[in-house]
Amino acid sequence: MRGFSKTCRLAQEIGSPVRSSDKMRIAVLCKHDLSSLEPGDKVHTYDKILALAKQASVTLFTPHGYASVDMQSQMRIIQVAPPGIRFALVLSLALFAHRADYDCIYTRDPLLMPFAVPARALGKALILEMNGIPSLGTEIRRRTRRARVPRLTFLICCLMRTIEAFSIRCADLILPVTDRMRKTLLRDYRADARKVIVVPNAVDTTVFRPLENERTRIRQELGLVDETAVLYMSTFSDRWRGSEKLFQTMDMIQRKRKDVVFLVVGSGPLLAEMRAAGERDSLDRMLLTGAIDHRLVPLYMNAADVYVYDVTQVPSELVEKEGSCPTKILESMACGKPVVAPAVPYESMLRKSKGGFPAYSMQQIGVLIERFANSPGLARSMGMNGRRYVELNHDLIRLTRYTIELISKTVSSRRHNVKNTADMQY
Image 1 (tube, rainbow, N blue to C red):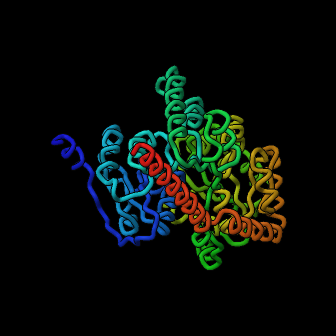
Image 2: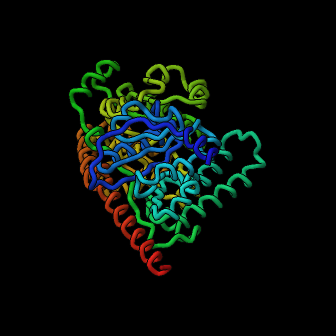
Image 3: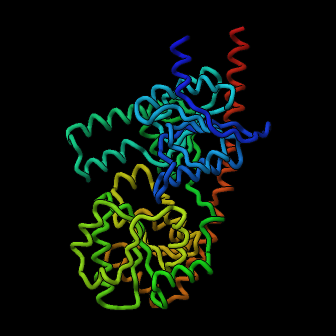
């Protein structure tokens, strides 16, 4: 017991917001560093956690220093241990020590779920949101980047798939973000179909919305007058995204016309290579902002007239197993901006929303950009269509409410099953 007490002291509690007794109590597990945010998956995780905290009582279990200051007023935060292996080792003990503070455990990371499995013996429900398949993403990254030991890729991915399968089997509720991913979980991981319910990616439509006053101001700051501004946001880290091909298209358009400006947001290891390979005159007419704070993303989206998704060709493995519902596309639609994206796999979404055009080739991406430049009215009309689509299908507040309803039913079912088992044993 002395060793257990010493281990539990590694967990530091900060924040103690007032709780309402009728709120669902959710323990959230997260190993992302949310103390500083840039556009990307960390921001989406941050948004999901804050949205849950506004409608439920959340206790966040995270490594030391990984929660932002503003999160501390929204939820209770248990800083479990330093990041890395110590966080994983202490997590199960921290969950046990705080077992009276939550009804269920939620995470977006299937690799963290095994550390929560012992809590099932205490009657706690396990909720797993799947916004991707980690083993598949790791395989593609190691294949397209310079991996330190390439020969270990197969072993690493096999181990990850084993952990994913265990997590999926143990979870009481699984929330994939696409229908295609649900089919993969049922087919490849033998998940229980009754436990797998699709809840698509969501956008805070009160943050990502048309901002006319801010649009005028930021365009003036960027030196934009009547030009058609085409926004491109990327981490410039994965070659499979095909950013260099889009830069070639930018060069081609800007050699033909002066009324189209490309607003390039983001930074990464591949950006310098693409700039070196580009035409100097074209690069001089591009607005390269570098990395920006995530809070500025809605402003840059509003400054633009068209959004080009930062992938020119999605790997077939991702299309087949994960499907796609990228938050960046939804955010730009929510800001009232039309989207140009690859036809595979985004054609269905774009046609259903009437919020943009699918492109079947790199050449067609250029044609569609010019079409919007030639018809500002079309861009505004499709932007309004996209905004309505997101409000109806991907609003964060509404989908969070739906998620909590699903969690509540799962918790009630779990308690009922535990009670029945206890009565039978008695």
